[in-house]
Image 1 (cartoon, rainbow, N blue to C red):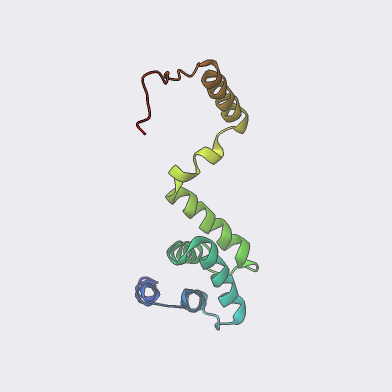
Image 2 (image 1 turned 60 degrees about the vertical axis):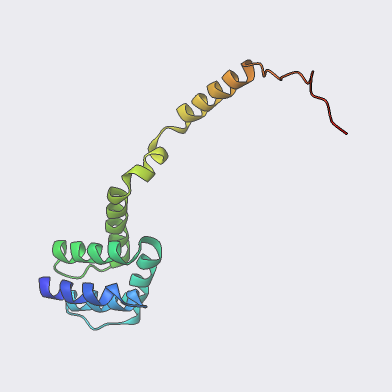
Length: 130
């Protein structure tokens, strides 16, 4: 599996069609012929998660499930999603925050801004030279 992953990783770096490369790797790992179904599945995952997250997720799936699952798309999607979230935890933290408390904090900030009186400087002494 290590030689296979290195071979396909090198091909994936410079490929214009990563879905086909990943489908070929998937087929080799599960010892099945490459079909349109695997290519479409890999293209969907690449479109959503990118080539490298999909690559490592396929390796995770092949390492955990030695026999090809009956419905690999939902399983691969779940693995990709977990890998993406663990990689991008900083950007997804706010989405896990309670929106009720977030809106309440925003309302408090708006009230504070509204309470402050704006000090507008006088226009005395400003003459226009014509």
